[in-house]
Image (cartoon, rainbow, N blue to C red):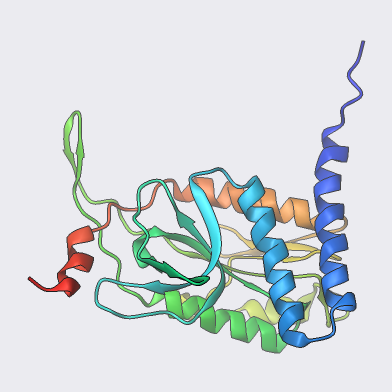
Length: 241
């Protein structure tokens, strides 16, 4: 007997859940700060439930071993398998730059100002210094892993543009500044975009954008593979002798 399970239905239910909850946050919560916090929380929960356990998503600042800090980032996707945590207290978290795979900005709507804002947040992380040590293996030492490109993204429920994802969006995402490049984004009500290896922005319009974004993000994380072996002693040096 053919199974009645349906992958399309399962993935569609993930999308419907996130779209419904983001809609409640946007239209059912009055205070702007509470509205934003609720939306960020929905995205964080989605990622922490469905990303492989080697990754973790949280609102955080990012720090490097030279004592430089990023701005506060809505969603930092970072390594939890190989990288130590730097600091956590009262809901304020700081993670080391070497552990970061992706940084995302969560907004109610996509518009020109919010894209620029996200670009600035991404740049504040990419400018940080990252260490990479020689890796000991059973077969001897392996050279330091080249530093990966930290993914930058923006996620929202709706778009203020008409069409929601068209040339105005592509124009706004176009930049020659590598630090400000946005690689991936989602408008749950309209579709997703991603930047390919040849720097082409590809739009995927239509339903199930939230679930499509989740799977696309996972694919991009797979391409990065593992974070570099960070120099923990460079951080410990700030404690003094």
